[in-house]
Length: 544
Length: 94
Image 1 (tube, rainbow over the protein chains, first blue to last red):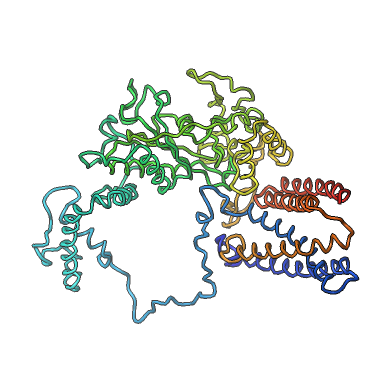
Image 2: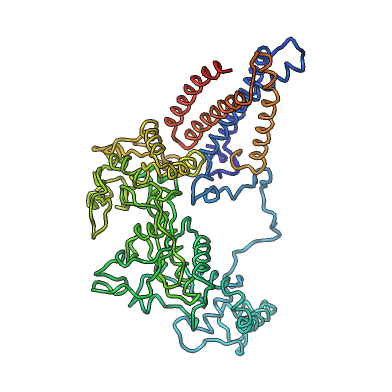
């Protein structure tokens, strides 16, 4: 395998094999085009003159090439990573688009002038500053071990040696301390003008340090609640009163924009229905009878998809945790951001850090409808959406729920029910009444049996129902057309036609084939992407 | 790569535009030489037939591109059969 055939980015180099193949195809294409032109010339040759005949030949050739072009454009649209909603081509490396190959050299441009040596920690500015900070403010508390007034001579090694050797650096460091103090004092003049920018910066840093720059060395992000929500959800608020929004509408629009900047693909806002909050347990307090906290008035709901190619290769090649980890980061940042603005907030994020159940809240927030498989189906992502929310009391304009005909489609479709190896999805309904609500309700124990049966190291999900759902489609023109037409068709003919195409043209493994042998064949809906194929990248014997 | 190229993608659609322009200029010459008496609605039907053919081919190719070769091939086949039937009808009308 040549170097150029592996690790390529979709937007840059192609493999040697692909290049050779493409060149061959180009030659064949040009020859075919020549032959076609000759035969068209023959067909088009008219008695009325050469120019007229050439025009006819050109026109006919253009018509044929127009069809070829449509095929090429269609193929490109299907293949493009730009259709991976929420994971567009830049998450697959296309941002690294510059072709470096012609500029590769044997030596780097920085040059080697004499014998080299390994660098020391104190040579790094931030290494020096963090060491000095730990001396002035010992991490465990207590008296400073060093202060600038003590001078270089009282510094411990290796800082003392470094600063004696680089006296100018010591002067620069003292100047840095002076500037830091001045910057903190000057912030009073700017803190209103740059309030949002500061809050956004601090929220983005919240995964690893607090607003004073103290780094977290352990724990998860966002941290699990400890104590009552009336204390935990207000932690980190430093303002005397919240930064007031101009109106609830401003608040909604602004917070949606911010949530998107944190990485959310979809965002919606709902007034929180207490029915969706668990009773009998509250994170931070444990088991017990608790009221829904008074400040949980609204939910900012956000969704991100799984990487599309691995999602289609469920159950064995897929995971839930790619979207989960993104959701945690988004939720944690949004929680911190609201604290920065002076509002209480609590993140509810996957896999289990929830005090509420997400799909109905997302439905209330207008993101989609419930599907037969009990998952939220959105028009953009289908059920390929993982959900999280932040509960808060910021007065916001809420979104209204939507009727996109998704439940009607699910009534007819039943593909997920037919392909579920556990038989966990109902073929009927929705006819089950749960706590007063009519809905489809999966047999969760049977679902988990499949989690615990598929060829994975942990029982971390199966997701076959996500992969086979006709709504789990990328964003190319074919599916965009379906998405546009189906909700606008009151007759149901579009959904029936789409469903007929889905069931006739598309090929699905049998339900039991998704299981490992001897019951099944470790089947997947699509072939896995090459980056998940162990045998492609590693020298392992292929025995399967 | 064509799909992601900043320039090639644009050039591709410029080229497609030129092809369509050439086709539109040549179409009346073809119609006259074949003895068709074209009216506006006959042109519309012909353009619709060509557009539908292009969309059918593009839809099949899109499905092949998104790793659904069976669906793509069936879509292409269905589109081609439909277009052959429609072309017979169109031929009668023209």
